[in-house]
Amino acid sequence: MLAATGWDAHGEVPLYDSCCGSGTIAIEAAAMRLGLAPGLRRRFAFETLKPHDRGVWQALCAEAQDAASDQAKRVTGVSVFASDVSHRMADFAQANARRAGVGQVLWVRAGDALQRMPPSTQPGVLLLNPPYGTRVQTAGVAGSTAVDPDFFTQLGRHWKNHYAGWTAWVLSPDRGLPGQLRMRESRRMPLFNGDIECRFWRFDLSAWKASDAQPSPAGPT
Ligand SMILES: C[S@@+](CC[C@H](N)C(=O)[O-])C[C@H]1O[C@@H](n2cnc3c(N)ncnc32)[C@H](O)[C@@H]1O
Image (tube, rainbow, N blue to C red):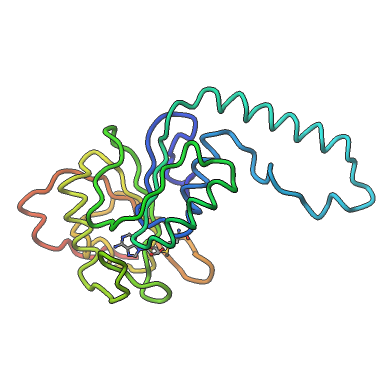
């Protein structure tokens, strides 16, 4: 998903997941920004196989570690942001970020996506996998689990009011998402989240206009 957005992991454009759950997307983004090779901090089953050459593998790991150390020196400040309405999930994401070794470049907070203001002055990329009715339901302030049928309409309004200049990418199985957000997508890609067929939608956010009061028709699939 990060690759599909075209987000420049080595640049400085901020990335924000405002429905971060356990933090998967933001942690991956932070690891990319830090130049951490995937799996650098874990062990692999092949390391126990007979033909495995421990010396070659250790040299490769050391090379990847040096590259990450060089990249870490170039990264100044925090530019990856994550939040979730659930304090429990935000704590979980924070702990996962620390375990993944990206805690110093990733900002995690608890908060409602319908109220959170941009975490940076520079517009960036919003990338989120919001709750789907099938598995997790939207929750309002204070973590209520009640379904809010207006969640996406309110989210669209909040983005238009406060996130002009940002690009939002949303993974959702709901083909009517643009209509609910009252926005027209600029891109739409088919993607599966497990066995759930989704669309990965891109919205170029601009300031609210009076015409936005009318829902845009849901596009074809
Ligand atoms: C599909 S999950 C996201 C999974 C996530 N990508 C991960 O790596 O775990 C949706 C998340 O949205 C959160 N959520 C629901 N309503 C929210 C709201 N109003 N503001 C912010 N987060 C919300 C839920 O707590 C849940 O963690």
